[in-house]
Image (cartoon, rainbow, N blue to C red; front, side, top):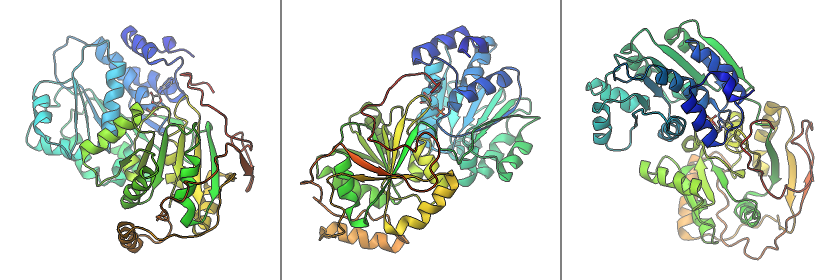
Amino acid sequence: MSFNALNLDPNILRAIADAGYTEPTPIQTQAIPHILAGHDMIGIAQTGTGKTAAFTLPILTKLAATAGQGRGTRVLVLAPTRELVVQIEENVRAYGKHLSLKMATVFGGVGENSQIKALQSGLDIIVATPGRLMDLMDRRYADFSRLQFLVLDEADRMLDMGFLPSIRTIVRSLPKQRQTLLFSATLSREIEGLTHEFQHAPKLVQIGRRSNPAETVTQWAYEVPRSRKVALLGHLLKEPTMNMVLIFVRMKHSADRLARQLETHGITCATLHSNRSQNQRLRALRDFKSGVVRVLVATDIAARGIDVDGISHVVNFDFPMHSEDYVHRIGRTGRAHAVGDAISFVTPEDHGELRSLERFIGRGLVRKKAEGFDYTDRPEPRTAGDVGEQRGQHRQQSRGGGGGGRQGGYGGQRRSSNSRPQVSGNREGGNVSGGPRPPAKPAGRSWGR
Ligand code: AMP
């Protein structure tokens, strides 16, 4: 199917062509007609499926059709994190670039004056996190009396993060006559409750299952002693195809320490975790997106909703505690049109979680060994600062996650482009194949792969 068959506004079709999209993704094909027909909708879709465009394109089309009917905020999008809010805004700006619409974002952690000024200037679209918006609404800075569309994006995460009371307060002050679209990775009982509360006869669009990592992601597991994880990472990062690498750790302190350790070996990194200020986080994302740094070290919570095209590799430096986090993490590569590799370090302590994960995703991960790398467990003395941090961290962590703290461990390793894959578990599906990593990632913009 082509975008032309979806009855979108010609100016939006132009913007889609500018973005280089050739065909709609499955959620776009299914959701856009329902939204254009005026229905409420529940979209069950993983991140990376193109869900932002699935709601933005028809909403913008409807706004364009009623342009000139007076001003007033007609669209409110609520999302769980500031990062997601900024990314939704970027998407809306890109798709609406040939329309004259005013929009602004509202989120906590930054000064409120510019947000208040924006709200008072009259906006068509507001993208917000619930907490700050509720605060500004309490003080009557926002007027939603002309609202037509409410979008609850990543509703499951908003519930996890305790936003339900704020969302309830916000929704109570919106017009009853509106179109409400709700997106979530899962359809839990809580989400069903939310849809009964806020929606009217919603259509359900469900794409894939949460336990299904994107088929375009190749998944590898490297078994490594904990003391050798940093050294192995440095060894792998010598591979030039690892050109845009998102590394996950469990704890914010591990993120800082790992970044420091990599930097002592000439690998510049940005970090993303909840101890960083909003400006630092936005700068980290900007530097990563633009290629100023090729490695971003992040924690699970901070990385929620990251939308960065072209991530070549996701590295689970610390094995994820929950299988769902694994699916979420590796969904950061292989987004929409691209392919990518997901690499997981597995220490002996992680074997229980690895087995649970393999049951959850219904397949075994291919075990891989980096050739020319010495896997011998041999912890080395650490710097005073590292020892202090590690002790502090040990108190918080049940196990794993420490990263070994080894400095300088991979300086003398022989570089190798070959790896020996070994298959374990129930092998299934095209992405559990052996063989060396493909040399380059195709970067086409087509969905159909
Ligand atoms: P989302 O699921 O909204 O986070 O989207 C994931 C990524 O897919 C975003 O980076 C979009 O730019 C991209 N995308 C959305 N729709 C399409 C499409 N039809 N073709 C190619 N890429 C798309």
